[in-house]
Image (cartoon, rainbow, N blue to C red; front, side, top):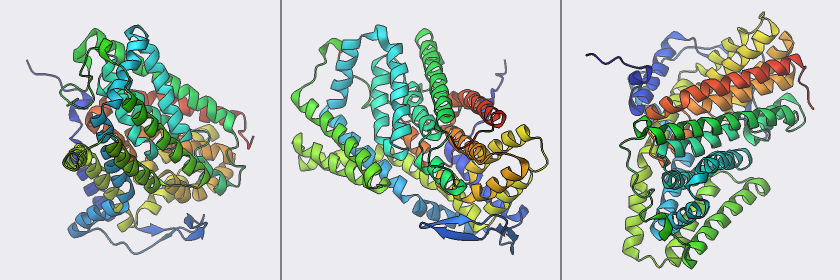
Length: 465
């Protein structure tokens, strides 16, 4: 009997998918006319000048250009690539110390497996809160903690990804105080910073609540039938508990390692909010923490070297994927077609009914996110174009910024060209094709919820406050 292929059976391997997108970007440079907006420098960042789009001489990518885009992508994404390596090394030393396993084992021992669904609900909101208040790539090092916890309560690595990667992505993407998207968007729109926070907060809470329900539903399905799990066959070494739950207790060294880890997170949060730290500062803190843990656990020079290289080996595939994903954006920029796509997407909204235009703007920003995966970069490239279009068709600036935030934030869940999500999935060893099988229904549901909020914003004339 011939097996019927499901939609997810057609998903190619992530590396094949990214190479396909890279070649598609090159093909588009032959089809789509090249064009450019004028740009002005504001606070060190290039901002598009509305109404300045012009067609320029096309320069389609040659085969050599396609493969030159790959090292260009690695160069562009070097900050994210290094934080993956730094996070992997730091967690490698924490794993070697036994502190994470003992801490999670002790927690499960005291809570009991009877409360494991409550644990999933709480941890989904904890990781969502990290996305809201701390950022995105800054949380990469937290993902392995979810892996250990998920396996300890009877879940799998996909549940760990749902608890951590999905929650961080949703929290960050729909955060009412996101410095990168809302902060940049409000500055471009001349709106009070983080204004309209109440509607955004309700949207973010609603999306995280649905995610928690989705995670628990998946957890129950694999408890009742382990064959429903989507991470079967993935190596769990370093994540799984090695002792009986009743045997776990926290040693003095474990407490020192965990306190050092929490202190490093506190330093990072302080640096981000007070000194405007970026990804490289976080990487530096992780490297220092790794050395500190090696010192206090009396790691020999031989074990130090082995731990570093073994840890790098675990996360190297994810680092490679980030560089390859970024090469797609580099190729589009080399072909000068990114601005053309943004121009035509915005122009297509004029003349539509108001609510349809608002939804269309959300979907247009969703599409743009696959081309410009940086939130602040997409804001600088699209909002100076979208805001005047929105005013022409009757949308408030706040609604236009909301449509941008949703299009950027929600599509991050399924965006293979976004380095951050590829990096976090690599930390919990989840291939992107399996991730899509898990997350796609959730992506559709959260996008629908978000579009309802966009329609509400149109109905209430969503303003600055």
